Structure formats: C-alpha cells, structure tokens
Length: 393
Image 1: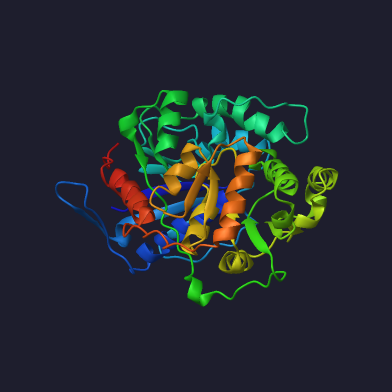
Image 2: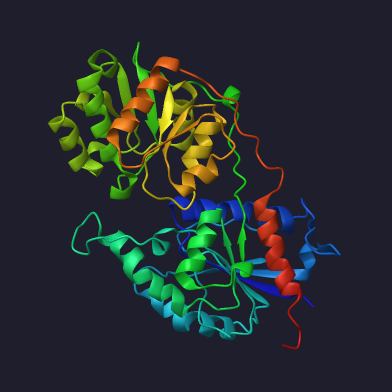
C-alpha cells in the first residue's frame, strides 16, 4: 500500500524560503523519476526507498509554477494574510478529509505544523531565526513592524502548532540551541543539516567590470534594518577621516536601489561618502557571481541570519569575507581561511578590516563542500517516518 506524504509549502513564494523549497523539490524530482535511490545509512539496517511506494501531496501557492512529477499531486491554495490562520487551524484538515487522503507523515516548510491528528508524525524544516532572538523592535515603525511581528507575536503562533513529538530540522548548530531555549523542545528531536549549495565554479563566470584603480567590496543585501548597511557607511566615513587617500579608491556595492531605502543614501550624503557607494538594484544571481569574481572582498555585517548564504557564495570564489563575530557567520565559515571576523557593532573595526584587505588583495582556497546531500537526508527522514506509520492507524 502506498504511503501518503503531505507537504505544506504555500508560503514558499520568494526569497530564502523559496530557495529552500526549490532545492528540496529538485531532490524529490530525482527520487520520483528514479535518478537517485535513497538509503538511510543511519539505521542499523539501512532502508531502501522506492518511489512507487509513496504518494506526495504538496500544498503550494497557486501563482508558483510547479514541475510535473510522477506520484506528486499539487494542491494550489492561497494562504496570504489571515487566510494562513484559517488554513492552519481549519482548512487543511477539511481539504485532506474531502480528498480522502490520510497522511502518513506531515512535512512542513512553514516553521510549524497545522492542526490535525496528533498521532500523525510530523517533520518541520525551521528556517527563520527571528522568533528565536531576544530582540526589541518597535511595532509602529515602518522599518521594524515586520521584525516586531516575527520576534514578539510569531513565537506564540508557532507554539500553538508545534507538536511536542515533531522532528525539527535546522541548518546550523546555533539554531538548534536557540530553538531548545525558546520552545523547550527535546534536543534529540532536532537535527542539524548543513545545506548543500551548488555554486558555479569561478572559471565559468565572467568578471564584472569595475571602475579603474578601485577596491570593490560586495554586499548582496536587501534593505532591511537588521542587515546593518548603516555600519558600513559609518566605517567608510571613518576611513575618509583616517586614510583619505585609500578611502577615495574604495567602493561599496549594494544590491538595492536608493529608492528602496531612502534613509541610506541620505546617511551616505550626510557623512560625505556618497561617491563610495554603488547601487546595483535587484540583480540576477548570475550578476552577483560576476561581482564576486572581480571583487576585492565581501562584507556581510548582518546582525542575524538563519544561515547567510552569501557568505558561502563569496567563499566559493576565494574572496576575503569580512563578517561579524556572531554564531551564524562563524559556523558557516568555520573551515574557511579567508574569513575575517570583527566586532559586530564597531565601525572602526570594519574600516580597519576593509583597509587591510584592500591593500592585500588576497584570494583563498574555497572551502571543500560536504559530500553528503542534506536534501536527500531530509527526504529520507520523511520517507522513514511514513514507512514506520502503521497502516491501520
């Protein structure tokens, strides 16, 4: 009898959550089409999984195009805004029962489960750090309102839909520690799977053209307050005072437009460093890689991240990476000689690090990627849980 695996991914529409879902879907496609045979080596007796033994039901956003795959049924559903609450607490159960589908395992890419039979095994991919941090944001500030929701209100929502027996997967060890601290979850039921990221080799990427006789530091970033763009502006202003000759040759490259974050160009102008800033707007990933190829270094002062993918991307190109002394950066770059960690909130330290790297203009050996495919491991966890579910449950 086929086992039913129900996957919830209606919020996987853009950004990091969409990237994560696409990576999983690529592995699922390889499994359902027979390109890979999954085997869980963690068991004393390894278990082999055949695609024909499983049926996948995936709840997705109706506006996102999905590939046609064997044994995969997509259920398009709009769950934006308050519709998400309705779906989590009532609609999911109604749709599943209406389709006469009995899940053998629930897999969620939405940081929590849904209200359903508590006996059904649950596997949750937890991918946001905000609910785990003790931060204070202003609910009435346009810049901080979303951050306030995710840090002050979202944790309570997660608790309501977090089964105590659920298995959780996070990307870094510090996330596991914070998850246990915040939600009191059993640490033995939390797995750390470092994501396997495929990045084109530098030899296949053309080099971006930069202004002659300049040192170019890349920051692939969105204009959010916690990304600490202001820290780099302050660092550049410090360099202008202490090393004016060098500062005239430095450029900071940001992947947003001035209109996206008006406070930022205003701050740069007030500190007299607007000529040191290059705005690229929202650009394709291939163009970001071209910046890495020819850049002097990568700067990444973000206050917090659940992973920090640009750190790994820049390291793959051998760039010096200047990052804050925070757990996420230290864990992602643990095996990279080109990592330079500086005090998180000290513009002078960032200025010194950029000046040093500009003068050295070094390249480093990229870190060796793990041979393990974390998405195959994740899918195997779901298949194992489904296979262990009694058919007469």
